[in-house]
Every structure is written in C-alpha cells, then in structure tokens.
Length: 257
Image (tube, one colour):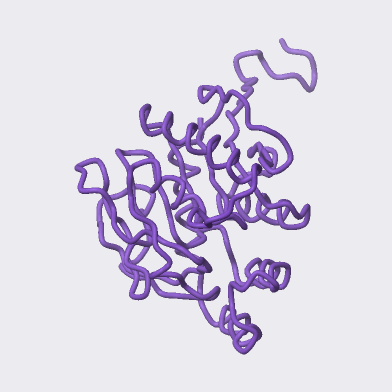
C-alpha cells in the first residue's frame, strides 16, 4: 500500500537537460532579450533551456562544453571585414573563434546564424566579402543537400529572412565542409562542418514580427535603405517562415541531452 497521493518511487521520473549556450553580442537590452526569445520559440524550448551570455558585457571565460547540449551564435552589429575594430570587437572575435575551433575539433553541436557564419567561416579558412551582401528582408533559398537531419522536413525551397553586409565568397575545398542551402543573391546560405557544426547566413530564429522589431531598433545602421525601409517590413509579412524556424526546432530535438 502507498500513502494517498504518492506514487511508488519507480514511477517518479526526474528529467534534466543540459542547456544550450547562446552567445550574444547585442549591446541593447531589448535586442538581446528578443534574440533569446526568438531562439527559444523557434527551437520549441523554454527560455530557461538556453543560457545566454552577452559577450559585450563580460568576457566569455572558460566554457565546459560537456555542460551544454550545443552552442548557438546569434547575430551581431559587428562585421568581420571592418578595418577599424574596437578592443571589444577584437576580444569577442578572439573568444568566439577559440570556442568555435574547439567545437570543430570535437565535432560538438553548433548553430551559428548570420554573424555566426562569418565566425565559423573564418575559423575554417573561408573567404569573406561584401559582394554578396543582402538588404534586410525576406528571400527564398534552396536546399543543396537532401540528407541532413537538421534540414529534415523542410521543402526543396523555403522562405527565410536575411540582412547582412558581408557573406562567404568562397569556402575551403575540404571534405568536411558541406554546402546545405544556396541562394540567388548570396550563394552560400548554409553549410555544415563535419557532422554537427552548422552555419546559416539567414536567420532561422526570425519571424516577420521579430524582423520588424530589429529593423526599427537598428534603423540607423543601414541594413536597409531609407527608401525601402517600410516596404521591406511590409513584404516580410507576406512570407511563410515555418520551414525556416523548423531548422532550429530540428537542431534542438537532435542535440538536446
């Protein structure tokens, strides 16, 4: 007999998950909070399942990768090709580069979005250029690889959101690098290093509402022209980002532990 309202010990299951580590570099509190919420929503996890570290606030320090399910790299006001970089930007690039190199060596799960593709690309020796910059707004991209778990359930082409001043011009000729998604204006929209390190030029965490929030917050940074600012926001609401967000949901489901 068991006390009323209590279950046998064999029926009491306590589950804990290692969080995902989100590295952010957005100095505005509103932008950092929105980024965290967007990732959690797209990944279909609770905000508490993601540990956000804001590198513009404090140094990254040592990271015990075994304490995490995976690493997420968010967007950034920084650009790798800038000729003049502040001490803060140089520190952030050094810390992210060191962590990414460690993840690649271990084939530890990473998903780097937008700024993250440049960070990962730099580590593997890719060439960055402003040639393939894209104005902030919606684009349609196409899958180049059919067998990939993180792309599972996505169609051959799908809608997504971009906004970047630099992009990958050339990937190294290496057997560990696989191009997964391509675009018309920007050829390399997503690639994988090894089996578990992913990078996207587009923003798999965004929706039209989130894009509008960021564009209005960063209106002064030139991600879209003043002439097309409102029309680009309006266009964003005409597209379906279900498959776009599915990429992050797949990543979370595959690597959460």
